[in-house]
Image 1 (cartoon, rainbow, N blue to C red):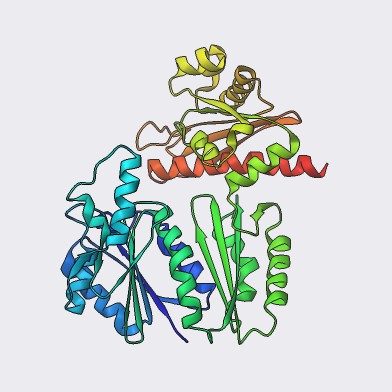
Image 2 (image 1 turned 90 degrees about the horizontal axis):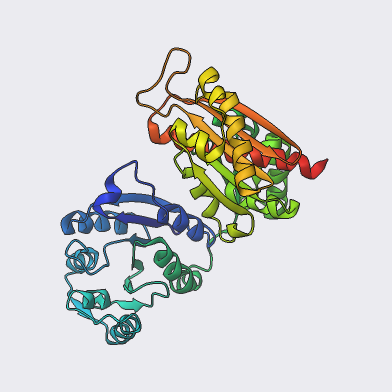
Length: 416
């Protein structure tokens, strides 16, 4: 079986906490051709490091795809590293140079000497047009090995991979096994509880199961490979049924669609609008909602009321509620929801208020204590969550928990 490597290039990407969109995307797209990714590496913007990583990858993989290091600045050295590995040089591709010049001119920008580097390709390689940016990719074939250099910006990486690279790879490896992918999203339950549903699938020939927990959201992947799986469609159908019955109300989607998008779809189905009132999440909740294209059809707006005075003045939280119960309380969260619905004349609202840390906690309300609340035309609910980790993680978990709370109640509304 042919295999592939993905090399994520960039000094900032060496930070293990830095998320990477291109690795998971490339892995899934290559799997659709029956080409598994068996080598994945992150490497800094240093020509020697990149060269040796490419050497290792090419020694054990048939296809090597890089992400990053093709821009115009001095730390973009992926082309030079690849050229050094092959004992080759780098040259300017005249066709892409023409496209690059035209694109910059349309933006009122002249081509600069540094900018010309985005039209460079390794000698013996072929420029790959970039439909979403300025730097071209590069296709290199060496005997029965293929090295593909792609930009690191996710939309550019995805554009060239889908439109240029995969169509070239598919006919080169016609005998690869058939692969079927299933991407599920669940929320509101810990990984250990999802494990009860997934455990029977582990170890089955031709079926790979992965689970990626992300602070209140689980991304579950199935890859079915034939052979040895005899009937891909039947295997996927069985997995879908198991996930639906095992995860129940926590199953958000079976097609990889995010919690934020599914929530927006339900709001549109109900013809309801949404507003937000945030304290400890500082606008993160609203950011997640508007990250979905078309959110303007249902999202009215939000208020970040961090100070108690802002909670009273902007959201109408009664001063007595704050005095008697404190900012981090069920009563305040519910009052924030009512205030947001009233201020924006929205059908629904979400509110968050808590102690994100690292300071500010008390014995009664330690760091990580958060109250979330939601309101719809059918009711109002509040819940205390406790997530005593770092500040950013508490904020992320709180925002995801709030989205799930409303989505869960909208699901119930749709079945009533």
